[in-house]
Structures are given as C-alpha cells and as structure tokens.
Image (tube, rainbow, N blue to C red):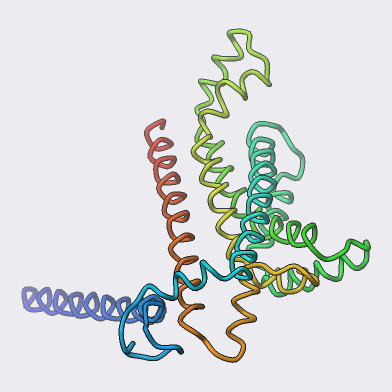
Length: 277
C-alpha cells in the first residue's frame, strides 16, 4: 500500500516538473522568438520587413552605417551614456562607501530613497522630471537627459556597489589602519582595489541602461536633440524597414555584450565574497 502511494507521489512530482518545464519554455519562447525574428529580418533582401525573408544580405547594416542621421543619433546616445556612467558610478561608490563604513542616522530611509526609482514607473519619473525642470527653469536638452538617466541608473549601480563594499573583509581595513594608514589611504590602497570589479560592473550597467533608455528620455529630451532610441521611434512610426531592424539588432548585440561582461564581473565578485567568508 505504502509502496503504491510513493509511486503515485513520484508520478505526480514528475508530471508537475514536466508541466513547469513546458510552461517555462513557452515563456522563454514568447520573450525571445520576436527578438530572433527581428535579427533574422535585419538580413532580409526585401525593401520592407516581411516573413519569411525573400533572401539574405548585409546591405542594411551598411545602410545605417552610411546614414548620417543614424550615426549622429548613435554618437549622441554614446556621449550621454558615457557622462551618465561616470556620474552614476561615482555617486553609487560614494553612497555604497558611506552606508557601509560610517555610522549614519536613518540609514534605512536613505537606502529606501535611493532604491525608490526601481519600483516607480519610468513614465512617472519622466513626467515628474519634466515638471521639476520646468519649475527650476532648467532647459531641456543634454543636462536634463543626463539628470534623468542618472536618476534611472543610480538604484542599479548603488545595489552593485553596496554588495561590493559589503564583500570587503574588515580585517584588511583594520590591518591597514593599525599599520598607520589613514582613512583616505586605506580607501585608495585597500578598499578601492577590492571593489574595482563592482565599479566596472556598475559602470557597464549604467552605460547600457542609459544607452537603451527611452521612457524618461522622451519627456526631457527637448528639441534639437535626438538619441538613437528617439531616432528609431521616429523612423518606425509609419513603416518598419530592414535598415531599422539592422540598427536595432546592432544595438541589441552591443547592449547584450556589455550586460554579459557586467554579469560576469558580478559573478566573480560574489564568488570572492563567498570565499572571503
């Protein structure tokens, strides 16, 4: 009797696991099949996007590389992303160091305020920022977009830097200070080299998010400034061409590469943190 019950339980467990696996596969297919279709159609020989493609060519990648407006929008996004990366990473490093190495009153409140943009819709952030910029009379353009992107990226970079600083062994810091090193020297010679993988991961993630950001950018970009995301949005308003598919696929590959590097650095950081304990 008990043997029969255990076999029935095993069969039910196997069926549940199989059903869960199939459901997970369907979710991944739903997420990634459209991306695969986008990449494949970027090599189409047709003048408009169609499936299946009538043939395959690299013509459209050359087309967007020879398009001055597309290249200018890419350069604009790269410049904004680089400034955002520097500002967001520097602020996250200061916040992470302050929250983990100093006695700060209302630390939980500060931490919650830094992470708040993670749970607030980018749409709401964009509307709030454009109203605030109007209130303080900040003209819309490069400064407004950079501020919006820093607000958007800071929670992510702060989470990484907090993890990085928490992974630094206190014994190393205490040993350096016992040997006569000051707080600044200890940070420069001991702490910063230890958190450097986190700094690089934060920088890459901030750059990627800024380069891909469109929700908040739409509200604060102003006239005369076109990021690559805004350019794509403008071009696909009426028809989606293989050239836009090629441009989007190139951005996808570029962003995925940076995210993979950031993920690898975070994995190394976690392994080091686990080894230190």
